[in-house]
Length: 326
Image (cartoon, rainbow, N blue to C red; front, side, top):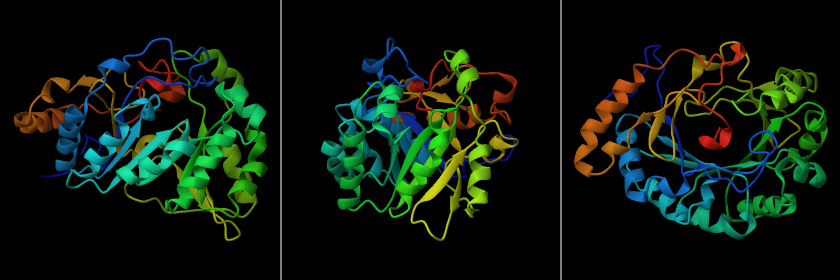
């Protein structure tokens, strides 16, 4: 089958699939009061996920990223990974996690077939980490990263949401940390959602400030891979690790969009900041619905617009990033 494409000619080899909208952290930029409302028990089951990913694979999707909320809160998480990994055409199964109990669980994740791991660490200072996330679990997460390397994972990506005068001033500590290990440290520009307007106004800092510091220190921007996420990555000859920057407020950010999103309840969202999703769950109840499901996906793609309009203050229906994994 011909691959998915939208009216702008963009193709989509990459799907971000939320497994739950429940999260057990209370990060101040996302869920400062904790996860008060969620639909965890109504999430897609393993059979529905298999049918969904099989359809997307048939139209050119090669990479699946499992997100949440926190995806590992699913008791069947390992079964989901192994099921997706077995689907023909899927070349990479990745996951974004807050690292909860990662030191105890990462071996089972990798044994299930997980290929790539993104872990959220917004500060390497234990006190700052706890202030941001509401949990004193930094050492547990760092131990989990060490175990992932020991179990054979070749590299790991670590995400930090940039916040003014909180962690943007810790660039030196992050760079020292990745100097001798294969970690890609990704700085994500704080995005405004429906629930964080005042927080955004106080803490937003443009990602280009980090970029300028990197260039001054001799870092060089790398070419992007076909199934790469939105980050531009930088390398330095003296560092084993890399740095990635995700700057959604920069000009032409959406020009190279290559990913789609499906919520934990089976709604296809054309953008993180879409007003609402398109229900696919009704077509996930039987294997015989695959052709209709593929036709529906293609039809919905015709509605994808060329940008997210974040720079104009538009946040769509996204009240917080835990709704569909950021």
